[in-house]
Image 1 (cartoon, one colour):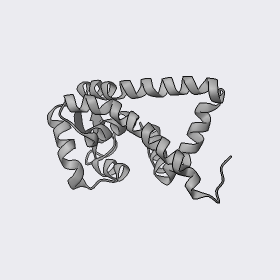
Image 2 (cartoon, one colour; image 1 turned 45 degrees about the vertical axis):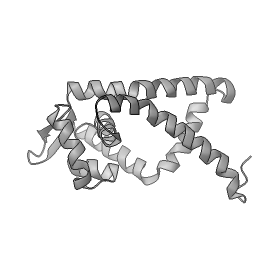
Image 3 (spheres, rainbow, N blue to C red; image 1 turned 45 degrees about the horizontal axis):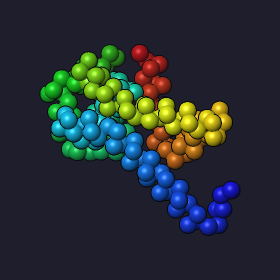
Length: 163
């Protein structure tokens, strides 16, 4: 049982979260290294795979990066034909970002081990925590992600609604 009056009681959970995060990101880091890329490239590919058609401004806001910070990794992904820039369907002045086939292949490679880790963890937790383990995990993660997650899922729904 959680004792909210004892903040140090969460120290074990913080450490557990750290090791889980390290395993999760490490699964993609090896593939990124093979391509000479870093986590900024990974983040761009992740969000464009999940939400194609984002503008550079929307991507910057979602990742909480400045245009200056995103410029190098995004330019490389465009130059290597992993991301394409297209005029917006409704507003031709709007520049939308989409993964190319090469970008989709790299995104799948980066997330393949992460998907395996998630599947293994959820399958293992079903025995220990019961069939509601995945829903419980999402229930904890949703408030941690906060308004950023809510805003992002709203923008995805809006973009899908206009497509």
